[in-house]
Image (cartoon, rainbow, N blue to C red; front, side, top):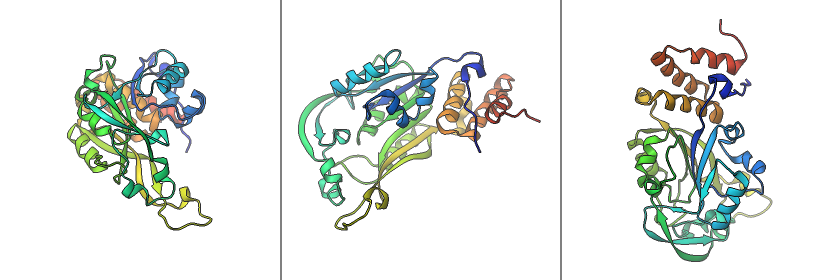
Length: 292
């Protein structure tokens, strides 16, 4: 069944921009238009409904992000972590570079992966705690992709977590980096902070050696290695959120995930509190049909 896109400014009679915090906001493609295909919140950005604060420690990459996105979005060349100095491992495939060293005992068991994650250079880098960064004033959608350091960033970002409604974080199911936290560690921490697992967004798999031949290793590899996990505010505690945060939550739930049930649940809480009819209005806008 097809669901309509919703013009949220028209729906609400005006709508303030959502705040997106993006850690590891590297440009994977040559232009913002191409990049948009992989951005979960791109449709909201096209509607001018989001304002992004992003961090990419590579200065050239950060410059390109600011150039491509432009105001009101801002990107800073900060390495996010625990506020301490760490070794930064610059890998052959730059998107695998990490504060943690590559676990070659494991990744070399797979075709291609060991070469992609081969470290070419190690240098010292000073990290910053999220809670120490003045440019972060509010967060609705929190996205992390920093190669094993996601839990470190979140543990030093209690103020950020307290504001966040949805967290999309990369997680690893196997130890791709030596000493890194795994999915179970991230999951336990976020549950302790009032979030619940909502869904898995993407999955990265590996194809074991020594099998060779005419096989598509991206198609036939079935060992789950990494993916994106989506966490949301515990739905049993929606009454603790402000009306504005609930409205922000509803917009993201539908526009990013087409989560019609979750969106209706959130609007139900708003309608119960304010006496509005957002739930009915949403169903009509989504389906294009008037309620009976």
